[in-house]
Image 1 (cartoon, one colour):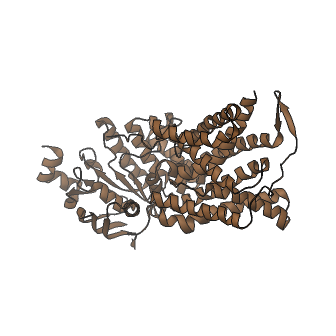
Image 2: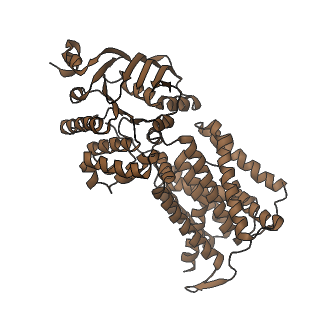
Image 3: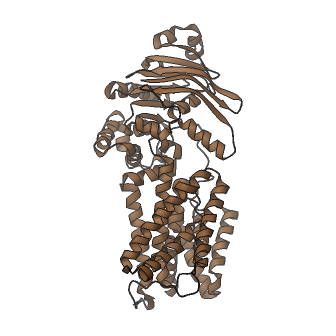
Length: 248
Length: 288
């Protein structure tokens, strides 16, 4: 359903993504792993369309020249020049790095803002669903987003993205800076979301261990290029990947 | 007592003048320097509709507000969108539009004290021993109603929630399907209508003069800078601080110090606390 072909992104002359291709079928979880500066976030910007907004802002402010090459196909349609808000309307929703929740709004209001694209029945139903997969949020529903812990904020960010009724959910480093217990809890929730809602998910992560077991297929990025790819079993059995990501 | 009552009235006037400006900036990071011009324009259009077209007063006000909103939306849609993201150009473009409107009106014959809008209700009432005319009470009531309506709108409707999301984090809002340009048009329309409402309740207190355009802009900028650009709570608090400061100086120094107070407030804020009382410009980003 979703495919990126030969994506190249330059910041001025620096190559941030070098000919990256990936695809995601329906009802799948795809993992993208790599160290800092490997290009994970740039990839997520390119898939969600935020890169177009960043590109335009830089251009208007006289900043960096950003060049994007390659195609992004979604149900056979090339959406590489589609704005992020229109991609969201089509069902591609990004849950951004560092969560970016609305800190001056309550938990419930964050979810309601997330439901901008949903009708009132979907909004009701999805809020209830978010509260069943993340019961912690229900207790905190009147608290301001800024006063949540990192783990709670991440749950809220994922919940907020679900409110937009995605068909493809892009999770950019959802486990960043969280404790191992929360990491495993979130990884489990991500799998549940796929199993229960039939949403395809692309998740990027630096720390592969909690995410690797839940993915169907994964890509390893290094210096902006995809160097290894395979099913989770193939990746876990690959000696290089093992050494780099599992330390054994 | 007089200071208290007139201080509140003056503060609410400032809230009315600043509300539209702060809303547009808060949502779209767009400093609308045509704000004061839209204020004068709304008043003048109402005058025209009443005196030249012959509509009745309430209907004229409604039509003028709708037109003002459309003009605001059109300003963004046709002009400002082209310079979006270039901060200096946004100011120059919006200020140029404002100048064109204000000086156009002056050229078109809007000068002197001959253009007046009637008060909604004539007469005055004695409040705790202070005589206050009804129009000034209406100003306070209108201010309260407007703030309440705005609050209901942004927390209860889908469009309002979209604006609120956009105001807090543009990119996060985009990924949820909230369109930046669409929200900017909506915020400009609402901000212009708010400028219009301010004009319609405030202008009956005096006459419609083009200079009001500049004065309203300065007051709106002062309130927003002191309160922290884009912060609604900050703007209301700042309006009360400046509002009372103006009434106090008017009482003890002279009426012509009003604008000096506003400008001094901008300077003091920029020196002491550049982000304003509730500003988030300089807030440290959370590091992970």
